[in-house]
Image (cartoon, rainbow, N blue to C red; front, top):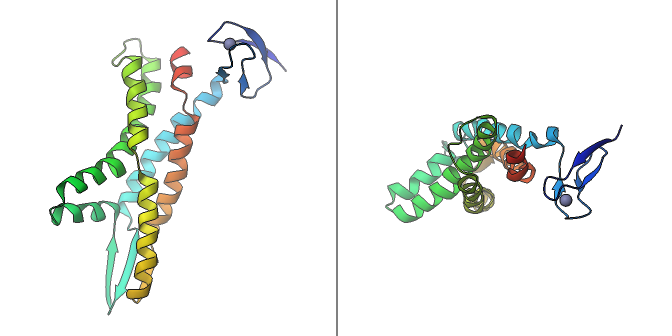
Length: 190
Ligand SMILES: [Zn+2]
């Protein structure tokens, strides 16, 4: 059954037929309330997957009977061990911190929208979300892992993707969905 909803941007009343709709007058997107929680669930799932992703190795190499396993943190720590501090810090920020803070910002926006007291202003959260979204480069890292895999298959006797790699692919999808579904303005206007 159709219900009548109001466009939060220009005040126009229109029919809601349970789909994402665009306001015919001002063109802003109007979403149903139950849709807007999706990004929260995706962000929580993304954080949990990120923890798992750091536990399991990404790649396993076997060379002359020795087995080497590498994790996400392990690959980043190599930069610091080899004294590439700036590159290490940049990789740490773009691969680990920015994606974590991106998910945390999404979760926090939902928490704050339910609280009476406002800890951060809308502007800070809005800018923060876009900042961490812009600086998250985990998809570039995955391409790097695949390239490493292809290069190593020729050298090491057996190279295989490990559990962590598959978790990472799944993580990337969930992470992407949490950002795609997130509409900071509609959460604040509820
Ligand atoms: Zn409108």
